[in-house]
Length: 299
Image (cartoon, rainbow, N blue to C red; front, side, top):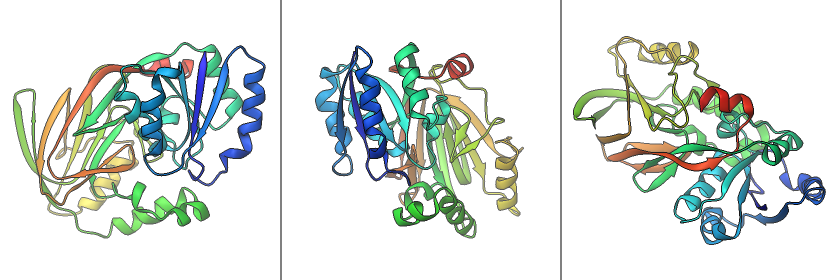
């Protein structure tokens, strides 16, 4: 098997380069071949993933969720799609946590050498592909708005501080969604879309019982209540994503969403676009490595 390791040297707080010698020596003990590529600039890995997809069986991606998203978008534009494996080295690493992969690189490599990959859904927001979340409204800009120097210094706590600041802001925007022949409209403080039960480092066990290969994407529309809307939102999140009576939860393969032109959308923790969007799910579009426990639970 031919592996290409794509890594982001500035992801998170750790220096992934310090692990490269160990990874190379581990591969030398196997029949697999390894090539290594270090990202040179933003979106660089998307281009490399697209250009070199035909040459490799597996792409190993070292970095955070944004790095994974870059490689995913390259893979999805290629006719040949290498299997995806993650070596998390970012701050939150939601995708890796969802797949049951931790920061112990030797354990992760054991998964990639011994487990069979599974087919996983890929979602799309307008022209961008993403794996697990798309969102707008309160607290959804935090993952890409926090300065990198703060992440380097404070780690995950930098996101928490920014979230507390964002909670003081006013949020109120119109949403109209068409799906499965239906249409609904409401005024929201947040729209949270997930294909699983984790986002922003939090496990939302009461959000849904979705699978990662069921061909569906789920949206929770948090209504702009007349009073105590911040308390209501935090109450839902603290209780593991429990749906409140006034909120709306829907699932479909495709959503057409109309909103104000200044509404920003986040996809897999990165800024995606503004205004009207279409979200659709491509069932089992890629192969990906996951732990045995995750495969049993989410596939």
